[in-house]
Length: 71
Image (cartoon, rainbow, N blue to C red):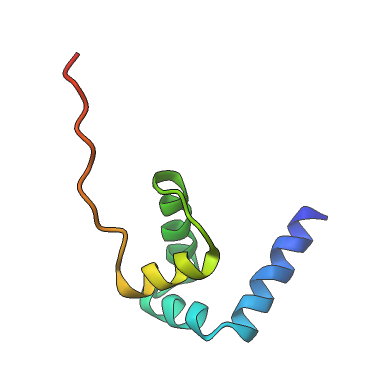
């Protein structure tokens, strides 16, 4: 059931969200697009999917890496 829900959301995004279509074209392949999305979820706290899509379209989320103390 969860896989069918993910498929439904994916299809709805493709049909209804022009921003999703734009970042998909920019990424080149759907595999690359979902890999980019997944990697951003690992590194950043995302407020909304729209925010995520806008940053992917602009090439955002650029910030300095935090400094860690030497062990």
